[in-house]
Image (cartoon, rainbow, N blue to C red; front, side, top):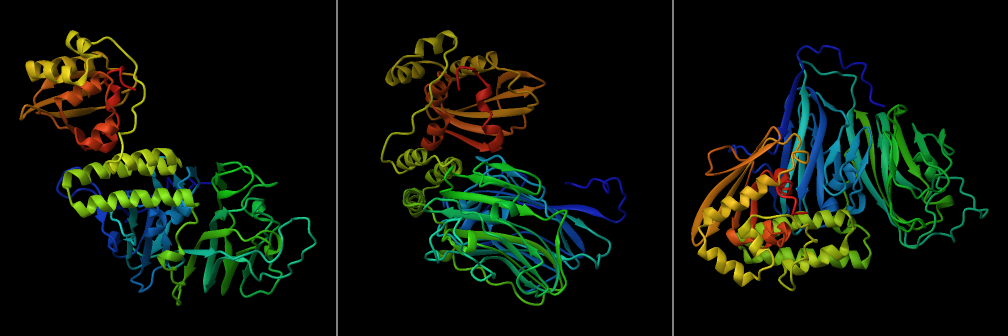
Length: 542
């Protein structure tokens, strides 16, 4: 539970600070690219203080971004990191699958937006540095980040340093046939999956566990065994089963999240495929004076051969030994089934080809495609990815737009509703473009729904191309009202560049924004979240 008792306490000398990827030119390009093999420092500070919150999202054509990107954190000028974990796994997106959940210290929400949060307090006495490395062959097209932290007048010597470590175990086969009712005995920790092994003084505060069961069957019944200060087996902290340690019971296959425990992902009721679990010791940290070794059996008596990966989180004072090195990328790649892997390779092939051609406009369209594909991957919509890849690669027609709802239109637009493309082009060529735009934007304003736009205060700019000329218009939304006008005199949150035909087809409900963006005939620049709200204009669009 979040303790609010200290919230009213005054803290003289404490200053709230933030590092982020904001556009230093004053524009809206608030993200940093990370080239293959590149590293970016997303935050660093001097003196004593504490990191209070990390938020990230990214745009990557590599569907394995969760394992190919690495998060590192250094405290007090140390030479080796206290945190070195695949980016996705650190935040809860294990095996490159983002499942929505909300806990006290980690959150992913919503599922299709890949908004990653950490609320772990991370104190330091003499500066900090947080960085992200891209170990993929493809670039991260955009990395967005906030790191909120406090600057203190003096260090608190009683505080440990935050640590996180990733581990994976994949035995070739189980030592015996699985079965929870067999009389197999396991009076030791030999063969257990290791969450954490550390020397020094501190406290263990929890772990996330990511399971891949290729053969199905119940992966649980593995007892948790936590050895404190070099104690022998049986440890003083010995549990009764995987499901029990992670706060559930009776072999559940239900997705849920709670402040300190949860199961954000349970792919199948027979426990085959992927499962995510977490348990945080926020009210009950495991303190240790000289060492700690946190483990869990792989099923009862280690009778299962599931692919297990985990992240352990702990605080420690005066670490003198480097953490075990992160395994090379090829040993970290997720155990996706062949059909999933083929989709990942297809996406990578499409984007690699676009990068090789170096066409700036094409790359911009592919960047938008990457965002769409990442949302499809989060939802495991593999057919949608197939369609998007085929369209991006020029091998088929674009994904079909959803059915549109009809509504009355001004006379010109009404005449063109069912007209073939060549008729529309001929009619638009004979009309004054600004006259057409006046009727288009007038229809949008007339159909504006203030309920859907509640709280919106924004100006949408439009640069409409026709006959080699560009016509500037904007639509302003303020206090539940909407108005369109010619020109571009106001601050615009987002600007759309479109040709006149595409704008008319969109208004008629015959053109999908995703399709048009990929073609480069209807492209947004600026606040991408505001661009997604364009459908509040005109109820004839979905």
